[in-house]
Amino acid sequence: MHETHLIQPIIDGISEHAQKEGAKKVSKIRLKVGEFTGSKEDSFKETFAVLAKGTIMEDAQLELTFFPGTRVEVVSFDIE
Image 1 (cartoon, rainbow, N blue to C red):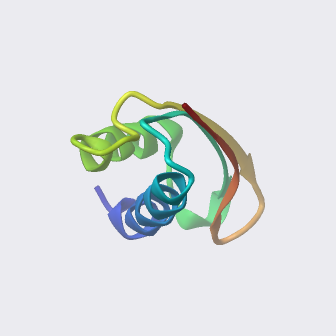
Image 2 (tube, one colour):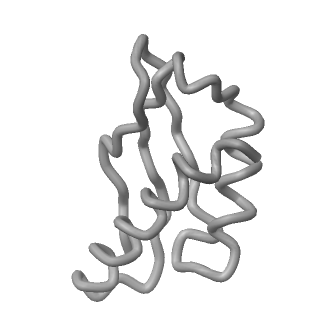
C-alpha cells in the first residue's frame, strides 16, 4: 500500500471540503494519477477503499485517469 501517502491527503482534503458544504456522502471522485508515481489502478483503488472506510467517501466510485506526471490531482467529486 505504498499509495497511502498519495491518497490520505486527498481523502482529508475532500472530507474537509465536503463537510463544509454539508454533504452526507461523496458519491464519485475523479482523479488524475501520474504514471511516474508507480501506482497501478487496482492497487490504488484497493488502498483508497481501505483508507476511505468509515468516512463519507466509503462507497464513492473512484474514476482514475493516468497521465505522464508525478502527482495525483483531484479533478472533481460529487457530493450528496
